[in-house]
Length: 330
Image (tube, rainbow, N blue to C red; front, side, top):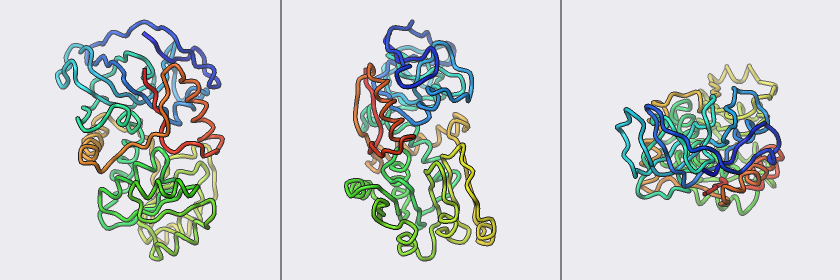
């Protein structure tokens, strides 16, 4: 089978594309014929040499997948051959990734694909939608009638948070970096969008939410806690999903006097059962048209190295060159 894989971590050009042996599903696994995958920032960190865990050799890259069930391992009863499925959490914690024509995946990490959604859209949404759900509902306890501020409303996770918050019944304030992205963010359902390329975000946010926001969703790798705590309502919550190496100053006094809380999390540390709960809501929102994937471009799997280069320029190079996910197909 064709696959995109690494023999050693390195720059994007370290990714090889070629033939590897077809996997055989073991007990509890499903063999999935891949129809679409997508790129996430964590994929580039692992490929670049981040030593989060030991990698298989050779290592197939990628977390997300959509496809069709080709074979079932012993004991799998929740799927049948021919079912359309999607999933994430592959290529993590020592598991093989998804950038291959065939993938053997533990059944607990797979979810049925709604008839209403195409494979590219669900692949593009897998990791980012689960992350958004875990942070918004699980950690952030976001409720109807509350207000959320989303830093980066057209980013991979941000675009999911915007749509889910609206589906829940909240008011959404988000940022974007150009007029085109402002309009795109509004089309996702944001009530107010601040153009950070020409507006003072802190001043504008205080105008839009003078009583503060109930939830502050931070995506910056170096968070501005002074700005965030000032923008929070009493007992407000803040979600962190980036900045592993950041050591910013923190306004302890204003934070505890307001009774605020701070939540950091990584989706791959949540159990398969917890992620299945997320997937049920995600499938419902897709089926009812309340959730849509934001895809910047689609490339063939053979261009996995180029996809990583583009993602790395956007994430680490801060070029803001993408508006949505990169999807790859066989």
